[in-house]
Image (cartoon, rainbow, N blue to C red; front, side):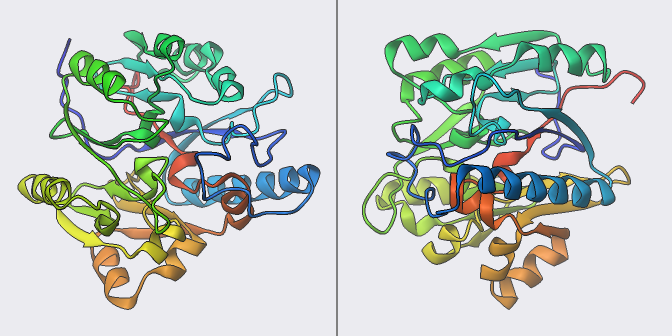
Length: 315
């Protein structure tokens, strides 16, 4: 495959506006971050739509190109607000589709969105790499939830869980020419952390990680060494900060070239003064309260953004 050089930071993102958002019972067993919102499904949808609109507005006001699609009423996809789990976009024109653990999440994969990105919005799609057949074997890899990509150095960090399997990781790595750094990570109760992107993010110069949840010392050292060897300053998070979604941030680049870090209001409040100084010296922080989405669905700002690294005609 083509190894088109890729920036770590995208200046465009895909967002899916929810229409029937609610805490998904089919994902509750593996996602201990969700199910804390006791509002009715109708109220959860109302709140989620408002929070979605606020995040989109904040990103656009800071020079990020947001491509929005609305979810469909049927089939019911309660987690559609998190498109990064089913798709990733790459600078060589590759679009990757991923195998999902929950059956009611698999219909989030929408070919019409990929077609519209090309035909309506001018993004160049060369190939669609569909890994979803791994679902037939009960093996999964949920996009850039399962994968935290160092796109410049072509390293895929992944914590193993019921949603992230080694054979699919190997398939992705071989086809996309990535090195895999896989590890196990558990929460304070010893349960596997369901997605890698709730515990770490790799930016251009700073990597944020809750490394204490990697219990195996050799694995933890390997992850930290990889981050250091690729020139990243490592900012460590506590478990409490991870539980506040501080690991679920995403670094982007504005239309004027400025680095931005998108995160939730809860995540920002959890950070201490020194951590904030480190991040603010690196980028402008864009934070929006999405408390209802976080407490209902167990995902945060990074999960809501599928970075578009595709080249754009006349961009």
